[in-house]
Structure formats: C-alpha cells, structure tokens
Length: 293
Image (tube, rainbow, N blue to C red; front, side):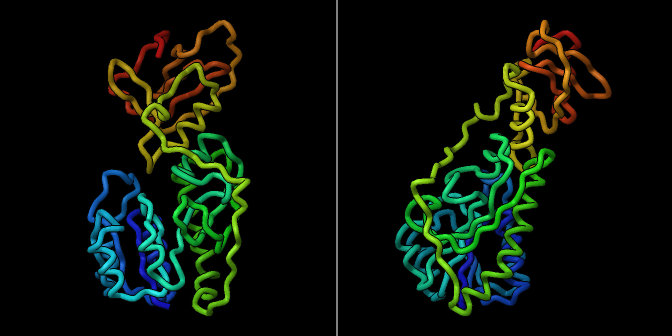
C-alpha cells in the first residue's frame, strides 16, 4: 500500500514517525517550510531526509504543481494529518483508496475548527480521536477508526494534545494493517447529529471578569501552550494568562475584576462568582491590590 502523507504540525510529525516505525510504504510527503498560522508547526523535512522519503514543500496543497507531483508517485491512499486548508475534489479522487483525515472530536459531533480548544473552553468531559475518509464537506466522511477519551479537570491544551497523540498512534497500529489487507470498515456518519464549530476570533481569547471562575479557567487551559494564550488588556497591552486556578471565596459585596491579593508573583482576582488565582502570566509590572482589571 503506497502512502502519500500530508501534514505540517506536531501531530503530523508523530503520525509520520509512527508510519516509518511500522515500515509503511511512504512514497512522498507534502509539507510546509514554515507556518505562521499553526502554533504547533513542526518541520517534517529532517525526518523525511533521514528516512529517504521524497518530499515537496507547498503552500497550496491543491495547486496544479503539487497535484502533478503527487500523481507521479501513484499513491494507493493519502493520509492528511494536520493541514489547515480544505482538500479539493481533484486530490480527493486521486488515490484509489481515498484520503484519510483526522479530527480529534466525537464525529459527527463537533466538526469544524479548533476541536481541542473548543472542547476545553466549553468544559466537555469526553471527546474522541477520529480517523475518517475525507469528502468535500468538512469532517463529514465515513469513519475509519474512532476511540473515545476522557477530558479531566486538570487537562490543559498541552496535556490534551499529548493525550490525543497517544490515542491516535494506538489506533494506527490497528487500522494500518486493516487498510493494507483491504479488510476494514467504513462507518457512515449520522449527519442529523452533526454540529460545526466555528473559527475562533481574537475576542474569543479575551478574559472578562464578569465570567464565572470556571469559565475563565476553561478559557485559559484551552488556549494555553502550544496555543496563543488567553489574555486581558492592561495599560493598553495584552497580558497573557497561561495558568490559573479557581479559588472558592464568598465575597458577594466585592465587584468582579478587583485584585484581592498579590503573593509570590501570583494574583488573586475576583470574578463574577468566586475568584481565580493567576499562577503564570506575562505581566511586566504587577497590578496593585485593590486595582480593577
């Protein structure tokens, strides 16, 4: 089974590394030299060179030049694990076995953008690691492999990202031999159960202390590294909160946004219902107790 691999992020690197370890027949890799769009960008060129895998650097996976390069390799199947733009019909129809994509959500639920971030920000307790056959719509093709996983209270973006990688690599151990043998299942999605998450905007990362403490906690853990971080605007500058904890205080007569305490570079701030302690942040100069943020 000749595999053409497409990817440009850390998840791409880990899954490509797994394919190499499994001695899969990777005939080519399409990737990018760099990406300002993907905060988890990972350069795949070194691993391609080390493993003597042909590679092509491209910004447009659907370009005529890229399509022609892929055609010459005559892949049986294409794996697209970590590419931010939609693949068009010509490429979807190029390999006889189709294009397998990946989405870390419990499809058909939660299609669309930023699945790990939204899962954390919305406080979901469960999600899933899903490999599926790509079609022209977003994340709506037949499911090849799907495994549920728990999202724990202490999970942040980095922990969840690593958890997803671990689950996905175990799935590959199962479905790669199935694909190679030609004996595998394609499970139709129930489109009536589907919803699609939208692309985030800059305002989606803005902390508002009128929010509940748990809502702020979820926002911060969802946007922490490897992502861009949740922020407040302080003295006309963005200040990022990388890590916070919820503090259960009963202060009904204290307005939200008030700095209650400064201790060892941490900041206790009143929220709508209780308070949060900011443990990791980018303040150049700490606010003062009694100040409103």
